[in-house]
Every structure is written in structure tokens, then in C-alpha cells.
Image (cartoon, rainbow, N blue to C red; front, top):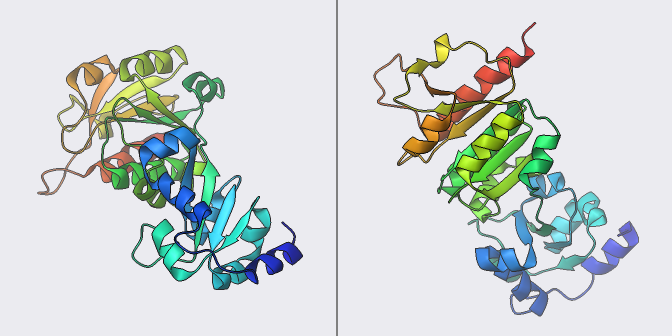
Length: 268
């Protein structure tokens, strides 16, 4: 949209929580409706800024005036009142913008065809906040692909999208794949497969070969990786604990493992 179009939109009557377009968009808070539409909601200006394409941008007049560059990128701009924004947003204090975006995930063969050197596999992770945080960490560490395998949480869950802080749009996301078949595909693609395991037989500090293309397997914080999946990896790796803490949480352990690979892959 042009700036003139955006200005005209912000002067138009505001949509309410009962406006059909708002009602339709709000349904995307439910997974089954996201799957049917293959669209999801992105909340807040920072996350919306990272989106590759914006199908529809809902915003208060104040927010649309404040972020005209985001409104100009949207296929459709819909000004809403505060009640409508609150209905679309899932945070207590929404930041004025909620966008509708198309799914961005790709099939596993497409992701592996790009020959990523660092991959994170989230196997059975159910907590959306943890999933989004690991996705953000993987992006920061330079991972090219993040795979949601097995019964993992939906990466388009609102909490997961917010926790990823826009990283959902930076990496190639794969979802809904069988964990065992994923391991086979990763190995066939030339990646060494390592399982992050608090009880692993190999210490991360003594692990060689991290400079090679690597895929890390991470399991749920409550149950860890299924034994058969951990056994299918090339090594079960534990993060050393030097203090008195019982363990690291999932996001922290993932950060340590991914950055260990990232450092080795970038060292002279």
C-alpha cells in the first residue's frame, strides 16, 4: 500500500471485535484453524518487521501512524479499536499491531538441499516458550534449519512465535516429520547427529569434530529425548555442570551446544 492509501485507511471507521475480518483472524489462535488456513498471527512491531510477507495488518490508528513502513508492506491494512486489538493479541499489554502471515515451513528435503552446516532438531518439545526460545537461539548461532519433529509443539503457536522474536522468519523451519526418519535424512545429508543428553557418555568439553556439519537433537525438558532416538545419534553428549546446579534447562543447554558448534565451525 502507498502512504496515501495508509492514511486513508487510518481515517476509516475502526473495526471492532465483532467485525467479520477480526473474527476470522482471531480463529488463527487455534491450531486447527491455522492448519486449515495455513496462516498464523504475528504480534508486535518487531516481529511484524521480520515477516517476509504480511497478508493483513491489524492495528490501532496510533500504531499504524507510528509504523507506516509496516503498513506499506501489508497487502491489506485494517484499523481496529482497542477492544478488537485485545481480542487478536495474546499478551496483556499488546503493542498495537497484529499481522496475519502465511506459513513459512518447508519440507525436510528442501531444507537439506541447502546443505546447512548447523541444524537444531526439537523432538517432542511441548512447551511453546521453550520451543520459540530454542528457535531464536539457533538463529543467533547461525543454524540454517530448525526441525520440529514428532509430537513437538506447533511453531506457529502464539507464545512460540513471540518467543522466537522474529527468528521464525530467518531460518528454514521444518515440522511434522518422523524423528527416526529425520535422523536418517540428516545423516544421509552429510551431517553428524548429536543427542543432547544430561546422562550422555561424552562430555561436550572433550568432544572432537564440532567443526563438521552437525545436527543437534533436543528433547522435552520434562522427559528428555526418547531412548531410541538418543541411541540413533552418533553420540550422546552431556553439558558439564561445574557448580551445584542439578541441570540446565532446555533453552540454556541448547544454547551451549549450538554455540559450541558455531564457534568450532568459525574457528581458523
